[in-house]
Image: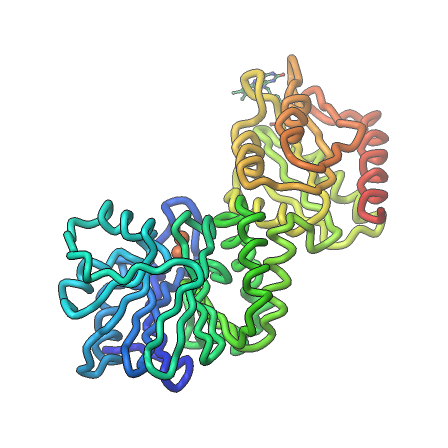
Length: 402
Ligand SMILES: Cc1cc2nc3c(=O)[nH]c(=O)nc-3n(C[C@H](O)[C@H](O)[C@H](O)COP(=O)(O)O)c2cc1C
Ligand SMILES: [Fe+2]
Ligand SMILES: [Fe+2]
């Protein structure tokens, strides 16, 4: 049975939820599922914006059939060729031989790579940045958004109803629960952290490209944002656009501390817990401590984009950094994290090397300060070293105030 919802009087949400998938992109845990959104515009011409992941194909095709209500499908606009949105393209075009594919040249090439469709040229309507398509009442303008999140990404701006179809941008992890509009849930308290984890992990690396798109969007009068995952935005657009502005500029949202420790036998963990206590004693609020072997890196990456100060504590491991901390730091390098204050603690029973090596990795991050002292344990924390942790806590407090 169909599960469609009207976004406006002539725009229908045809999305579908997947609550079974454990790992999005086979990497990111999604304990609350994910939605794949597709939208159908019912103008004089009918226009479908993207398809869905193969996992939810049945719901999608039932929705499409219901929403078309016997009409033909004139156009499919492909914003992004990643299979979570285009997996059903071949099946769609087999069912709807009347449909013209609207996409840019890069997308056309990718369609041919993914599928053996051999579509004749006249089945494509090639578009590029600045082109528009009139469908009756609506005029659709196309906007290039390279690397948000693949190189071929386009967005569509419906100039008639002032709707931005934003592809992966402004999406969030988490299935939709009947409420498809962000203003129908307490978004900031219940969903922002998953929007942040989605953005930072999936697109976080491409801050400058996101800033470019935000600049283009700033020139448009936008009343609604329809992304490919998660909620439709029709109120408080400045809130989510403001978050994107911060995240893409690698500016922290909160002057707070996150402590991410690795530990085999518990001694490094103990030092990290003590540092958290010392920070709390100094009035630092909302300190967050994570064990890198327990919390998936995607959550810590998201937290690293949120806060201004990060503490990494790790044992030495085969003359290197404890494996999960090592992985986390490399991931943060890959995500281009910048503008943070960092504190380091290490541990080693015979030759502690982790702090030096962590500092070497962090040296690749732009505009980050590593505080002194780097606290180094030899197996377990000794009473005399509490004073060092106190000094490090003072330095963190000063950085938070500065
Ligand atoms: C696989 C493995 C490799 C290790 N390699 C080193 C090393 O290269 N140098 C060193 O000083 N300690 C090394 N250690 C010892 C730990 O770093 C050390 O015992 C540390 O105190 C553990 O801290 P924890 O109590 O937080 O787990 C290694 C331990 C393990 C299990
Ligand atoms: Fe994507
Ligand atoms: Fe996606």
